[in-house]
Image 1: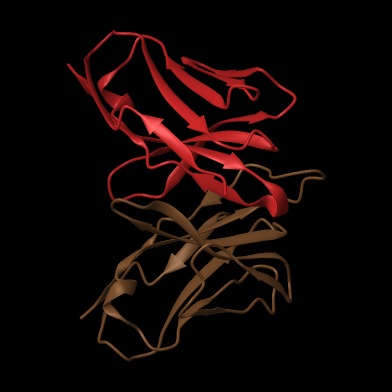
Image 2: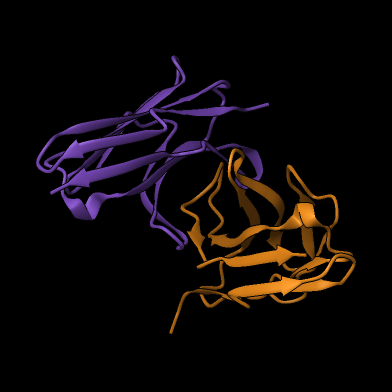
Length: 111
Length: 115
């Protein structure tokens, strides 16, 4: 059974800092890995999707990497802003279009 | 407006009652999903559907029933609600992608309280 772990569970940083969120998974037989953002009381918003054949994806200040062999992904956020404060969720795509989620990292960026 | 919507957004019910949560998407996505989100468990898949009239169980299907007679709708029914089903329920949809999953788009969620 696929298990997804995100470390740290919570992170508080000053504005402008570059930061890294970590995600690990137990079964390397994945189709892809997705990073989502969730604001309090809201649904999830897709940030980046990395196919299993890819090593990284970038969107603006966000960069996600994938190392299937070690079962790890990182989400790098450059020059963090207070508006980046949210919970970030990692999800691994397996067969049948199913996703297995981690519990998320709650990020607070302080002005 | 195009997108994925859920109704109701908030629901309070009593133990033993039947409750139906609605999900509607306007993209004609093949796949639709129901998740529940609980503290300490994260998001867990309840049921999913690959197309109209095709549904399958996820990780926590007990106590839930789904149907999908039309591509755009995917209702979730709690046949006899229990307190353990108090949760936030999210519906999601995605396109078919050969060989794996595509980006999933989530609705705003339904907060269900069972008294």
